[in-house]
Amino acid sequence: MAQPLSLALIPDGNRRYAQKNKLTLPQAYAKGFEKIDQLLEWIKPTEIRTTTLWALSLENLRERGKVEVQALFLLMRNQLERAVKESGNLPCIRFIGRTQLLPTSITERITELERETSGNERRLNIALAYSGREELVRAARQAAEAKERGEITEISEETFQRFLYQPEPVDLLIRTGGVQRTSGFMPWQNAYAENYFSEKLWPEFEKEDFAKALDFYGSTERRFGK
Image (cartoon, rainbow, N blue to C red; front, side, top):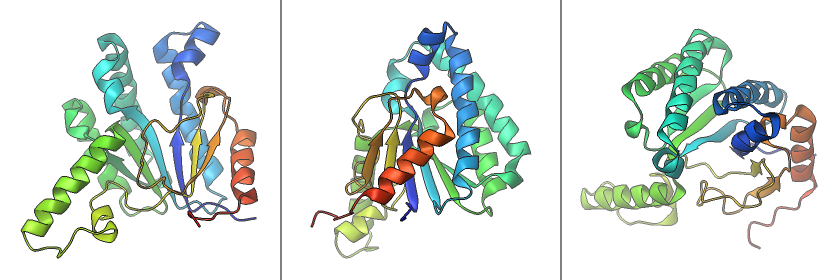
């Protein structure tokens, strides 16, 4: 059965998990971070080479309450510090999105983790302060500037996608939380992706659910618009 080479993941449902289980938001987010560790283990025996995970949208960064965002930043910083110590066991990690909007305490650790994992196998892209629309606008601007400098002769699909955060097309997109939309996540890369929507909230998503998503992908006939 065919398996995806590139996976995109929207881990939705942390806030609803907190309400459902009478937890604080930091406690629910901590459960969500633990699930990412498990996901990386589930991926190891598969053929997936690149995983892109949407950790924080640009809209959430701007619109969520200050207390919630600060609590999330604290968890992020702690997770990044731990990840640096365990960098030899991790994939090659890269952060995409408008990370310059994040606190210095986060961006410094991002830079360190990217450096420490740069030679590792497989790839994990973590989207922080990410917006699909912003990615397209950014790529269009950079492509136009490259054309003005003579670095490319024309702006075609091939040259345009070079300026995306992650040029590689996505084979399978998984979204948890029972919401059946992609919310603008990697719109260019997901053009022909197979979309799998799980009713499970992200902290409840288990290895068996991940296997079901892979089975779903293996059962589809990919037509790429044909």
